[in-house]
Length: 186
Length: 186
DNA sequence: TTTTGTTTGTACCGATTGGTACAACGATTG
DNA sequence: CAATCGTTGTACCAATCGGTACAAACAAAA
Image (cartoon, rainbow over all chains, first blue to last red; front, side, top):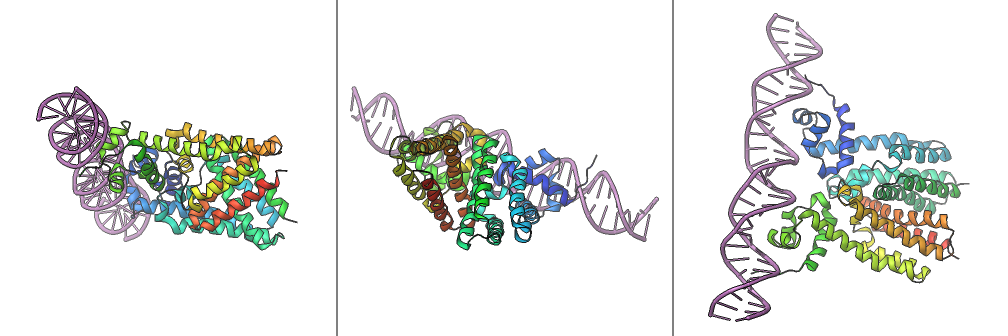
């Protein structure tokens, strides 16, 4: 018996493993163990090895946020996009049960390896939210601070709800954030 | 030549390494390399090996926060304690250049190993801040939400400022947090 | 059916992992 | 001085790490 994969099928599987175990905790044997994909296949699709795998996963995550979160914030109806962002974020992170891979990489030693991708992810998130807030009538310097506060708040809520093993903390944080963002828009 | 250590001298050295490299990234050879302490000494003071070392570091961090942050919040003048908390946090985390070890452990696979200590750290932080807010005249449910928001905000600010490699993000977040906490106290 | 080229499983590699064993060292005590 | 005891460096251990080599298994084209 022999299962045939495509690169696009493997990346989401890798993502879940990296998210759960971190970069250092993800060993090739663990990948094989959980997915059934052997080293032969892995190094065929990712000749650069583990680092290329993690890079592909980061790019995949990034492209999802780009189309699902950032783009609507930049171009769509601002009020609607902000509400959608919070709802999508809550669904994506499964109310805090799931971790932000990029955030985890930022804290890890791994950061140095992927610093460009990690920084890009957060810069674009803050910038997109900031532009939505400004279009909604928020003052520039206030929009910057609020956008940073919201993105940081989400990351912190992930840390906290994960530490307390309590999804209520995460959803509550998102509600508080929603009020703050709403208050500043006319 | 032979250097003689005590356990209390070693823990802070270990803390810095764990903080920088994470639990999985900290290998015994890296410890020896950075501190000059050999395996003989390490296993003499920490017979439980790497896990006991990390546990000792967590306990050390916890006791620092207990006396420097939590206790003043619970017993001292509330306004003063909250201002001091933000200042001490800024100094402790070196304006975001330094990471929160407990927060990093919460995101890591490591969490399962130290879940009790990690949860305890955050529970007591939130509870101490909450009690200070209530004593300052804040309503109970609002105090809970605000305390969680503040602690999560600090953790998120660490993630964000680290990702962007920008200490300004961290200090700005603390200032915003200070305003929020101040506004709710009469 | 044969050929071609991609995809896969498996055996292997040197390096490093966390951990153990133990003899030698240094200070303290007698 | 001799004996003791806490502390240390070093040599080891099996297991696992990321990575390589390569032949067998496959699908597609001829």
